Image (cartoon, rainbow, N blue to C red):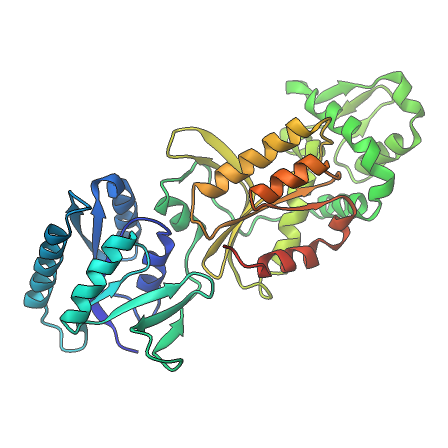
Length: 386
């Protein structure tokens, strides 16, 4: 495989396609030149931070007037001349153009210059994650599949999203937690109605982690079986009057965190089959606007970002459900247009919610579908992204 001393990358959108070729083991350059307009300066700085982490030197070229084709051509030609004059390696070709990330105009101008100067250029197919050298003369044009090396931290940073807490893809889930999850999924018909009440007590426990039970709930057979399930597995205690969740970890687990853990465990068991390269649960992030959010479950597979929101509450009306879907869509759209998002809900959502999810190009797995969660996730990941 031919390697190049310098990759010229065009900064605009889908920034992971500027990163993945540079991280490919046999294609890694020594330098990257980032060409960007002033509007995308921060994106260029984000990319430079990632490249520097992998010991790739970064240079910048700003396009002040993105509509002035003559000036753009002159600046790109000057940059190529400088790269060629400085190249002294006998083992590496001097320069190659990555046309994937740029605006249409910048990509066309850059590619035309490289064709005229008989210099190589390539494009990354966003659906297949394969790199193709241009022009595509026939089906035998030189191509290869990129290594799945992009990590969540790098992906998020490329879009200006900062992790607040540590990413731990190897987090151990307690066995008693897994047993509870399995029971709640296997007997969803029994526990679905009572779970909302259980969530309420957990959410109201406060700093003491204790909630006084309403005496009438002692006569709710399904609810008391749910309490017994958690007590028997030593996740909480009950003295006949007060539910004691013991600590914040258990309180969070009882208040719906169990579904996050269940989804996380199921995904991790599919890691080899789905070629998942990085996965995390409960990641707190800070968005470029400064607001903070939590990603229930997020992972990278085939260099694509996947986001899953997990909900155990039953929405009283379509408004609350639509708010959740809006949040999920917003978080998805802070990243690449190739990212995908999924809502896993213990309860069935309304027709209005499902229509809104379709509008946002979000997928829903809910209620009894969760019993076959693995297969639904596999099917979801196979769906093409527009």
